[in-house]
Length: 192
Image 1: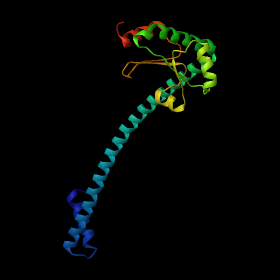
Image 2: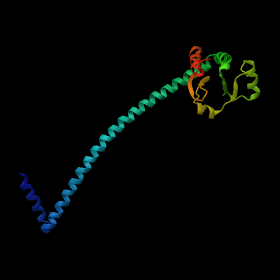
Image 3: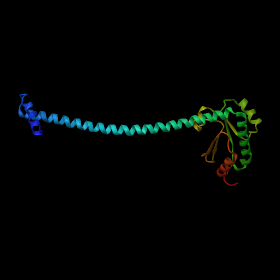
Image 4: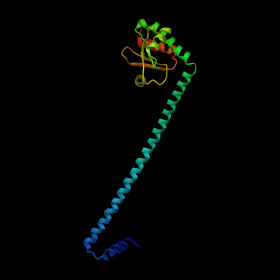
């Protein structure tokens, strides 16, 4: 059947309803508007599907980045635990010896070590420890969870090099490399 015959059959079915010609045209217009509305809805649904695919891809990339970041944090924590578990006294003592040496060598140029104790001991334990290990020239303070959060401390020892204006210059976690820190101190302190 060709298209005009089908159309005439459709209108013939409408004439069987016993309604006038104007009402038939109005009814046909309503049907046409419904079809157009459905087509627009389908078109919008197709666009929504495209957006969902883009969002899904972005979400997958973000999830991958978060997995990598989580893996790095877990590795860092494992390394810190291993360093603390492996002869932590010797490890901490080496860091203390380097800081004492730096304080003696650079104090005439304005260098100051500020030691923050994060182990929760009180002054009655901390003062004899400072004296025993030759750290009397350090400025020694008691730390807490707030200090850890503000400075982003996740392992000990953590060494921060700060310039005279209070700006971070560098950060070292674990045992510090003497040659590297000396270069950094020279850069921060300037020529003698």
